[in-house]
Image (cartoon, rainbow, N blue to C red; front, side):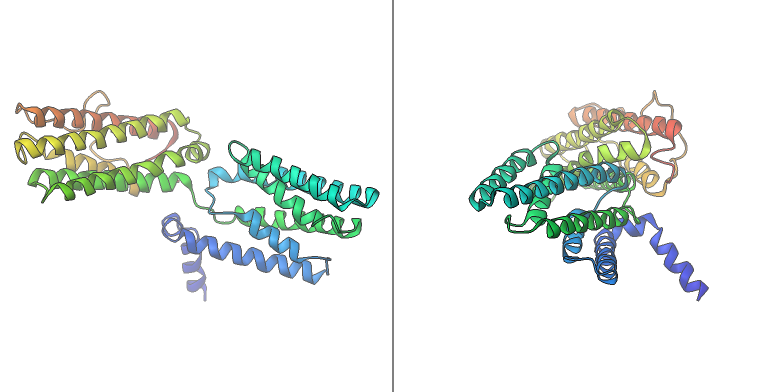
Length: 339
């Protein structure tokens, strides 16, 4: 029994498992939150308890990284509060004036205003506010008693969703490390393939498109990674730029290779340097032996020619990328130090 409990705990707190099975963890989190909402509202017989359950589904949203949860939690709370207050105000004016058309017009204007602000900064707050207005006020035909209970249900659902949002979250810093390592591994594979020659132009184009596809998601993780680690986002932007330069250099080298033939002055040490960085990012241990930040991680071959020149530029950029990662590790324990 204890062995089963230990294995279960290891699975739950294994960052790698949570990263690989993020959808499963999120689905389980949502299902448990739903059960808690149903049990709570049904157990103490809260009127219109189904709205708490609906709110859980609306609020808990997509998969959240740990570094992004606090901001999203604040946005959820503000959006829900605004929507509930506005919804109650609509019910009060309907009870006072008794003019359904005015209520419909006001609701349309309010939701249109929220939709206007839903595109851009603060969009999540505006979206939740509009949804909460409709949940609370309905079509204006609710009495104040029902509206108050719906408001209570919305806050209960929001509270449950926020609690479960913090339960076993995915870490953006871990995701960033694994994705950057995957990009470096793919770059090394492209470099090796390039030295032996691509089968045709289509294979080369597909390989380069794959590198671009692996590079793009890294930028979206930077704000959350910066919050989790305390490292300024500008430093991650520098690493993003270095990775982009490496991909661009590989594209140029592949184009030159078509003209000059495979392996023309190219340095095989580039692939091993890329793989060493990828291993360090995945395992949480700095690659050894360490090199001076002022020197490139790879010393290019002394041949001449355009491909050899591009290889030397790529080697130097890999050295700068490693130096940036080394400095970040020394200052904050990231990214080589496991978190």
